[in-house]
Image (tube, rainbow, N blue to C red; front, side, top):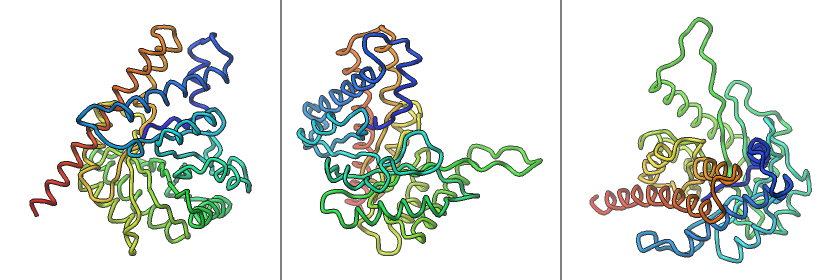
Length: 304
């Protein structure tokens, strides 16, 4: 899935570029139109090696700047995820308060997405948990929309007087904190259908996450890996490793795919068509990485 439900980040891109062809709101809407065009280009003309129905491709689109784009994505058969959280807030708050369900019912996305910044030391407030449970329960009652939980962990500070952990040790710490966070959220009554988790782990790390997410008889639960602003090469390696693990069904990547092409467009260095094609090419590279990992997993299953 190509993720562009960001809001503040797009305003920042437009502001920093000095783009003057459109007013700021219109400029953000235009950028998101280019991204949708790129996603549709890949989904509708993927080439022989990526042949798949449109719903195997998808987009994350927000209502504020992408309401019309969301309808177009649905009409073309793309999988659609829409956020319900307020943008650029460290704490979790519902964008439309208690009326979030009315907005979801209007668009009927495949997934209602929440983005949660989780600190292992303070966890979440009771107000945040109540809001998350409300979304979880609404999705359980919905016939059309499932619950997608994006989990972003704050890196724990090393104890006073201790040097930062090595890269390998830091990765193991992050994996342990992610596993503990999923377990804790389950105990709070929060039940996503899909977990959107940070990448950068090896196959064993992703397997540990899948085992945790699908524990307790939750065989219906799946996972996708996010980009986290990594380089295209690093994101591809992470996606390939995740795809080798049963339970991972895809990825959701945003900035890694579109940040540089959109900066070039907003700065006047290239036109719309060049931008759409660059984004489509980068998206295709990550789709290939996932399919390569999936093929490895399927091959391993066949051999066993």
